[in-house]
Every structure is written in structure tokens, then in C-alpha cells.
Amino acid sequence: MADITIRPISSKADYKRFVDLPFRLYADDPNWVPPLKGEALGLLLPEKNGWFSHANAQLFLAERGGELVGRISAHIDTLALTMPADQGFGPGVGQWGLFDAVDGEVAAKLIATAENWLRDQGMTRALGPISMSIWEEPGLLIEGFDHPPTIMMGHAKPKYRGWIEAAGYSGVKQLMTYDLDITQEFPPIVRRIIQSGERNERIRVREVDKSKFEEEAAIILHILNDAWSDNWGFVPLTPPEIKDVGVKLKPIVFNDLIRIAELDGKPVAFMITLPDLNEAIKPLKGSLLPFGWAKLLLWLRKPKVRTMRVPLMGVVKELQSSRMASQLAFMMIEYIRRASIQRYGATRGEIGWILDDNQGMRSIAETIDSKVNKVYQVYGKDL
Image 1 (cartoon, rainbow, N blue to C red):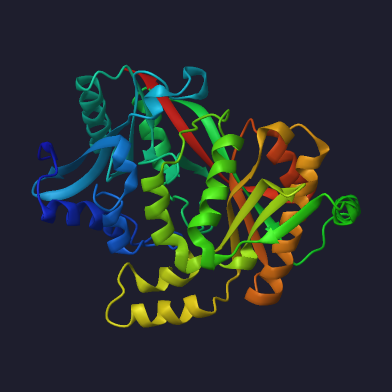
Image 2: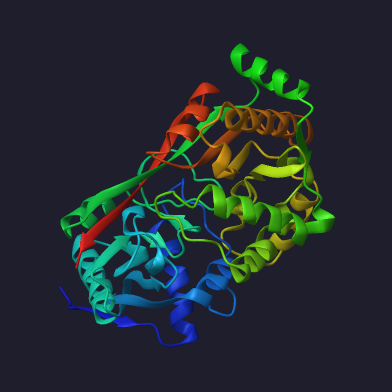
């Protein structure tokens, strides 16, 4: 068998090959969702991805006998280096991600190459796969291969787990998504909690105003960075990232699917829900040409979807251990549940990801009768 060559990407053609590889490797996987190639490329380019304002990365391609057989990224988030070590990141912790390989031999050499790059940058520990920001697609899918991921969630081949563990990695954190039949009303105790909140004059749960996008985003960002600051893996979102994410997600932001909860007139909680764009882009096979753009534009004007995803929810820290926190969460979930059914034809919700040790959010998810449908694992190894 020919030798494996691994090299850093060095040209526009390499970037294209890096993006194209999964289309070949997952061609026979009915549950893989081909990303729009332009979007996938944008995440790799500093001028398109605000994450690079505080991070740097090196992408690698693996070749054997002239054939492309694997890819990986190695990257360092300088904000992550400043985080407390007991929250997962911290000094000396780099990451790798965007990992795909045709076999275990290629996988081992790709991971070793990423590790060597991190060592050369002074890193002493590696976490992976994280592709590439913790806010993008963290973790390796280890449960839930039998159905497609929702928007901004990853997919992987089952054999990747063994290859990563064979490279000396052990699991450090699991991230879970929860599946929910939203056509069913919530249990009586939850309905009573919601009704009690509706009688409380101190509480107001409102829709966002998309015409004031930047103002509303600033409110949500303030709550998010407070609410999540003690969580494992937390790295604060920065204005350049918010700007780029806003451009990407604004077409699927709808007023009635994003709620802000106010207590005594002060914003204290939020919930973001997105129609599952994956349902619309999967048939496009990665390209908007020749007619994909028209199909997607029509869908965006009035999306009808089976699934809604809740990627983010947060309550300010001062309320997090109180009954008020769960009450506000249940109210936002219920209002968005109704809108999802009535205006978008949705029948299913997916909540997550949720950290395995986030007992508050897991309790809320389980109380409304949702069940874990996918598990992602972040691995770690001392270098």
C-alpha cells in the first residue's frame, strides 16, 4: 500500500478539496446532510468567520497514491486559553476538528499531525473533535446515527470513535440533544406553572423584533455570556462572531420563534428556536446551482418544517437556582411550541446541545417528556 502523505493546505484548490472530501466519504450515508459548500468554505476563512479574530488554525489534507483520504484541522482559541482550567479549556489547551478519514491508519496519522502542530504552538493538551469553535459543531457523534442531524449539529461515522480512542483519547464531556413531540400538550404540572407565570404581573415574555436585529442580539448576547459563563467549555462570543452569525442566520430568524423574558422590565432570559434548515438544504446536495437558490428562497419566505431546533436558551445567573428560572423556561418553550405548530407546521422539537452535567436544563427537558436522541462526545489527551 502506498505511503500516506499529510500536508498543510496551501491553495484555493486545497480549500475546495478540503470541503469536498465529506461529499465522497458520506455519499452512501442517508443521514448525512451535505452542507452548502459556500457556507462550509466560509467557516474556514478568516475574512468570513469572526472566530478567527481570537483564534488561529491550520488545515491538513491526507493523500495516499494520489488520492485524497483524509482531513483535519488543528486550532488554538486564544480566548479559550484564558478560561478557568476546571471548565475544560484554559492555558495550554488546543483543539482539533473537521476530522474525516477513510481508515484507521489515515486517522492515526492525521491526529498525530494535529497534535504535533499543537505542540509546536506550545500546547500541552488537546481536545477534539471541535469544529472549529465550541459554538459551531463540538463533539463526535457516538449515539443517534439513525436519523439526520438538525441545523448546526454534526454527523460522523460510527468507526471514528474507535480510531480516536485508539489514539489515546478519553471522553471528557458529553453533549446531548433531546427529542420532543411538540404536538402533545405538556404535563399538567407544567401547564400550571405556565399559567401561574401568566398571572404574575412582574413577568413579560415577548417576541423579538427582527427590525431591531442588532439591539435584540445585544440583549441576548448579554444574557448568554452571563448565563453560560460557568459552563464547561464556555468561551464568550465576541462582536465579530455575532456579526457573522447574524448574517448567516438572519434569514431563518423569525420573531415568534425567539423570545426574551423580562422580570420587572429587565431582560433575564431568552430562548432561540430555528426552523431546521437541514430539511431544506439536504436535497440541494451542497449546491445552490442551477435552481437550488430559487428553491431555498421560496422555502425561506414561508418555511414549513417537521423539526424546530432550540440551540440556545439562557437565564441570568442570579435566577438560575430559583423556581422562577424554570417557570420562565417553560413559558418560553410553550409559546414557541404553539407558534411552531400553528405557523410552521412543525411536529417535532430538538433541544440542545445540553451538557451532561447541566442538571437544570436536563430536568426541564425531561419534565416536558423529551428524550435523549443524540449524544456527542468531546475527547481529551495530554500531549
